[in-house]
Image 1: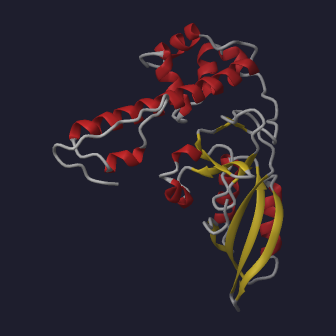
Image 2: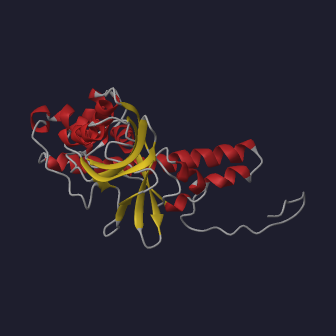
Image 3: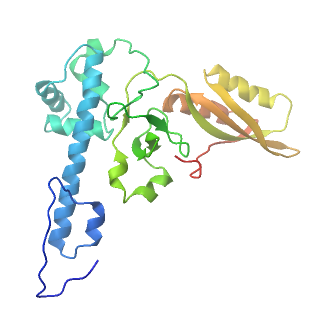
Length: 273
């Protein structure tokens, strides 16, 4: 990059469809240019969220036998004190509200119909036709948690939790980011989550841990000792859960046990994608 001097002439080559990148803010100097780039980025983000919100709304409406129309969205937006249907779609797209809440607002009787179990091969909205989907090993997101998709060569789209530390290294590669959301509905208990537990070295404690997990309809996929001391054990356990609420229930009941000193959800940035 070369800094221009007064009096120099340049040729500007334009490309159809080109949009400003977030990294450009650091390259320009005038406040006007910075403001224009930020405004364009906000508008582009909003457009993406509206598109994602519309797809989520379409799926939710079809589950109760209805079509998502501009009039329906405007009516729901008004009932929820929002200015327009696009405002409502944008809120759905950023997970500030759910499409199911919109359906409940318009069709409370239909919204109470039990939902089908989500197809585990297509648990999210936002993928293109034929795109493969995987959960990131580093943060192990589960349904109910905010996610963002990252494209990986040969792996399709990998979902990371919105607060995953890996995303910081990809901040400048916005072309790889994909807006995703989990589908509303009943997800099967197949999502692996890693836990580290510190338990008392007493007879029956490990069996009690396994029983508590099983009683709450979760499966133990892996269990091994990390550390053995005279008075306590540290163990690693990988369990499979259906969603964030299911995981929270299990963490709560384990934390309440007197013989379990600590329960930590393990996140490891080295295990990626």
